[in-house]
Amino acid sequence: MPGALLVFHRRRRIGFSLVYMGSIVVLNPRTAFIVLAAYSAMSFGEPAQGPPPVREADLLAIKGILVKLHPALAASPGYRYTRFYPGAGKPGCESTPDAKKRPKTQWLSAPGSSTRKIEIVPPKCQRPHAGVYFAPFRVSGGRQDGAFAHCHAPVTDPDTPPPWQWTCDRIEFRQYVQLEDQSCTVTLVGNLSDAMLRWFKEVGLAELGDRTKRGTETMIKVRVHSDGRAFAMFGDSHCRADDSPTVFFLADNVDNSKEHSGWRVVDMKQWMEPEAR
Image (cartoon, rainbow, N blue to C red; front, side):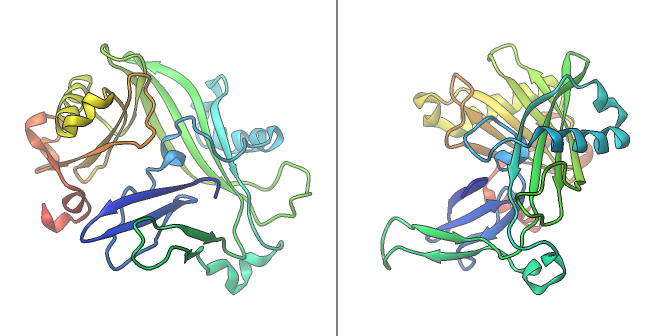
């Protein structure tokens, strides 16, 4: 399904969660715990095969909305790229019970199979969504400032010409930071100094261990939360992250999170459960 990302993780048995339209559908809730909520390709915006781009007329309408809210975006020369996620259902279905239903999953593999094949049954009513990744609109302190916007429109007949009536409920600013020992920039959501980014990279690669022998050597994405959680995603020498190896970090004291001594590497469960801190 376009725009979806399957995340595979292990507790006592193998489980999967589906990141779709910025939401997570847990496919095996008895053994899987939710991971990387909005941190799929849609959130970070790395080029990859996926949904088609947003139509030009819709882009102009979306940019008009966002520039009114954040005038600095007017300086952006364009878009890194965009993603369009079509809706489902008949116009007006948002007011029906179908609008509250989530995507369904059907397990297709036989019991005991090591490979879990699934079929995703989309909801009968789903608003069309757009992910817009603005090209950097400003350079400050050697870093490029960019933005990601998530917008949606009412369920609309696909034949209706654009622009549709878009609403943008989330805009996320990020920076693109160049580290001296790799060719690609690091997409940073949150606040970290260059020195801390280098430390995250060094510690993350060490944590990945043998993965570095198989070509994992660049850090491509970092997200830092205000509650003292962070994670870093890594890629190969060409900055590609086919399987997105990820390292999780936790700050013992949020007030001390500007120093590397305040952070430690944790497993996914500790990262997701604050009481395990």
